[in-house]
Amino acid sequence: MKILYTNFHAGNGGGHVTYIINLAKALAKDHQITIAAPPTSRLYRYAKAIPGVTVEDMQYTTRPSSWFKDRARLRRLIKAGRYDIIHANGSADHKQVMLATLGLSRRPRIVFTKHNDHPLTSFGHKLRVALATDHGIAVSDYIHGLMARSPYGKRPITTIRHGIDTDFFAPPAQEGLDALRTRIFGPDWQGKLLLGSAGGTDYDKGWLDLVAAVAALPPADKARVLLMVAGDPPSEAKLDRVRELGMIGQVRFPGLLDDVRPALAACHAGFVLSYREALSFACREIMGLGLPALVSDAGGLPENVTDGVNGWIVPVRDVPAMTARLRFMLDHPDIVRAMGAKARETSVNEFNLARFAAATLDVYRRTLG
Image 1: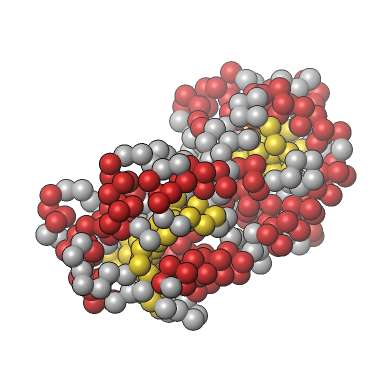
Image 2: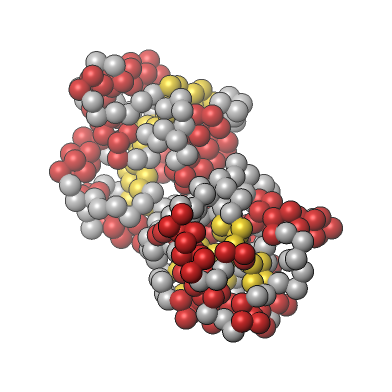
């Protein structure tokens, strides 16, 4: 099968990039994979390193000149490539695919994955459904519901939750953990509860709510908790809030990491407390590393966790509920470890890459059929 993946993000790209890279790695052995992405993107850089994958420099702009440059280049690529499937992963590249394929005598089948919970009711979406969508993929049941209640409901929709490489995201050797914890949290981590996230430092990721939850603990317990938040360095306004809560000495910011495993593996538990979330690669990576996950009930996020078994689910922005879970973790470290083992078991059985790739390939085959 000849498959073209498109994505418009010119920078980091977040979960969109992880999604496409995982599919490309899984399918490149048996299928011809091409990825068309901006040359400044993380996707372009990572895809270049995958054996057998062709990477094309492609911009997805709305400028008038794109009619004669970028759109024309995409159309030439599609005509020359004679792809069976084009898999679009964002509204901007989906739009360009629609325009580039108008009037083609042989149009590839087009699959669109909805990665976020942004509205789907605009005229542009109606047009893309009519002209350039043969099948929709939802990354969670929550997103499936949004799509079914939109113009995409006129097309087949399949829920396929993210897959991760559970061999790559695996618990580290125990003998190196002490040194790793010293590197991430400093020399005074012993006897403390260590929690981490690679979900980023945006306000809507909810990490400041967890800082407030730690600050609400009794002083002796508050001193026993350290947090790690990987992502872009926080702004001064965010740091001021951490200082107001008396927590500036207890939160580590390692920055945006190409490999989040060491920072997360140093923790006893992970957290993703977003205000909005389609599903969350960050949560699945936490669980793959053998850590229980503290998550909010936003969007599709709770579809990753069984409350009280491999993690905890709290209402969005509910600081007292977060404080109660922290109290439980401090009082029951043995149960936290056992929940981490359950999280790893869930990851291997339900989040694995082979299952994810096979389900996506099944959508391609059904769409062609």
